[in-house]
Length: 111
Image (cartoon, rainbow, N blue to C red; front, side, top):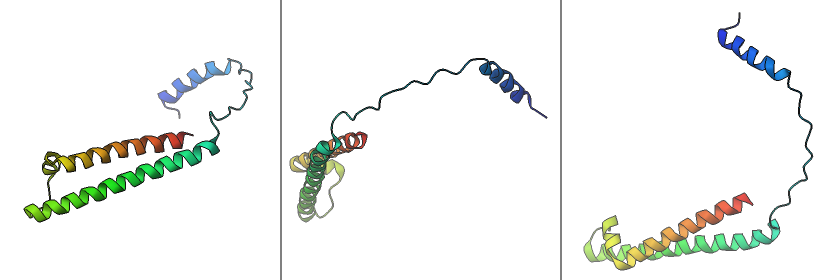
């Protein structure tokens, strides 16, 4: 036994059978925009450079946090990091490098 929904679908699909199929369209395969081999080395080095920058800035931030702990006796809060000039500079550089790294990885995956 068919439900009313199925009978509606059958009547809709019956009209599709009367339309003849379209002829096949022959398309040439698309060449990649640039040679993958040329970009691989260049993109890899940029990605490695950016990830190295992120780790170096994080190390610098840890050093500054350690100085803050010795000076004040507690781990700095986010507000403390933002209020201190050197820590804020490290945070900004880390965020910029992370965004650029994410963009480079996305572009690299698209190629």
